[in-house]
Length: 453
Image (cartoon, rainbow, N blue to C red):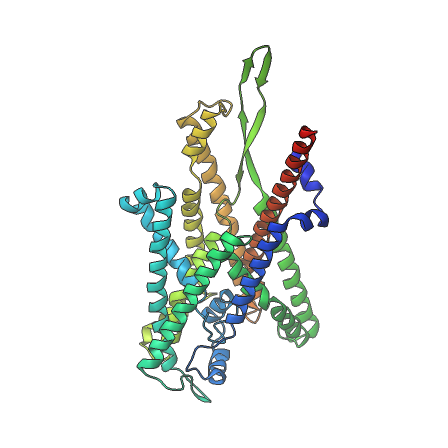
């Protein structure tokens, strides 16, 4: 027999959506916030010759800059106020989470509940300002040293340009940080993930057009037939990656939980069997985003500064650029690390085992308490190991393809497709939750009316 939740989910319709006033308001707020973000990606920073910068960017758009431009939603190639995007905030969040794990003071602060979480978030915001300012200054210095066939990229180099660039780029990142928090609180879905998601999706039609143009003009092979077959293969690979991601994100390991029978009066209660669902990839899309943020941001600043900086910067970017063996090795290692690290933060086996013990539940064959917690930890570690391998494989598959076909648009990469699919599934799941709550409220109101009658 289907559960009440499953029956309600089966009855979802446009009429149910029309009655969900709060959900419509949340969706409209989310769409409006993302429109504001997209408009900001077309406002250039002051003091830049946009034509000269476009000429320079087209010459070095591959590799590091191309990957960072992917996450910035095209803001970098136009050098707009959102060129840094939300990456400094993600880097600051990573640093704070690492510090929370190693610092007793921050660890105690985290255990204080809501007040401690607010303080940690405030420290993260301070860290975002510092990182964004440092990265903005590096980009400003690099832009001053950059020239093209059309002349200097900066119209009037000097202290004023550096100061205005730091203020503009840092302010853009702070605004996106605030916007992401507002989407999370007043909209639908995770605000930070949706900002990255919208930037990738907005440029996806152009990437599809570029792919077909390359396939039709023989951009992948000297033979038109061979080039068309490569284009078809890339499309089929993308569809396969999407299907694989959906399957892996839905996969679960269910631990059987038994509840004992209890007698109350002449009636017998309990005795039913349930399960504890553990996702194969409990960390979601966070590890690739964290790994990309740590790898791409320093390399982007080095790439800009390298045009007028020391030679070792060019040496670093050449060996740590996308497609290079060292880059792929570090990327896979960081994804694996953050998969385990983030899972340890969001999921505590000891708390789960304690909750089962409080409600009388137990895993058959295991004693409640420490034995159950150790078993849940053992299962979780195995799941995270498989999940991290899946994330690394999806994110690195396009890198191997680009070794053979370097002109393939980055938007068909595994990281971008992983973010699109994961964020879409998470957002749709939250919409379903709101609709489910709306229908439950409707049933409660009807039952109250019947009771009064």
